[in-house]
Image (tube, rainbow, N blue to C red):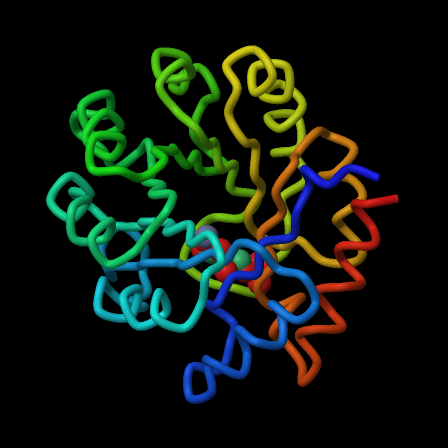
Length: 219
Ligand code: DX5
Ligand code: ZN
């Protein structure tokens, strides 16, 4: 049994009118991390929430909060999202102007820094930063919406990242289209964290859904 591997529920697909209940349901089933998707309607064609909601979620849970910034000019908002309670702060490699500086700043501000790479972006773009990150998030859909289909071409990127994650000691996470039918392929490719939004919160039993996914990665 590998306790290092974890399912990370994405609240994007949760019912925000009963957020506390949704969080308790996955906590009861053993969730230790939550994934918060911040979208600005500019970097991606959808808008979600900002630091005020991250702060509210922080009050509801002791789970490790990883905030995934799908926003332009992330450098402007790093401090706000860390002060709101993000334990890990992830920004898109396609959006950052001063990537090394941003990673250093996140660390200085007391959070774990990480990068996110979209399906069309070349893996080589990450190379200068591999020794500066605690976390690499590989998008297996084009970001912006929950409930999309996993793009299987990206699995090669996960395989390529696995030995580098061991060498440089960062967590390797996948995001997008992870469900009971796809989790095995991304698990085999070497991910150790698995974001799941609609597969967890898509029906009335997030606790059970979380457990079923966890079983798949812990056998
Ligand atoms: C998509 C977000 C994901 C989203 C995943 O842009 O970054 O975190 O919540 O949703 P599912 O698991 O439904 O694909
Ligand atoms: Zn995400």
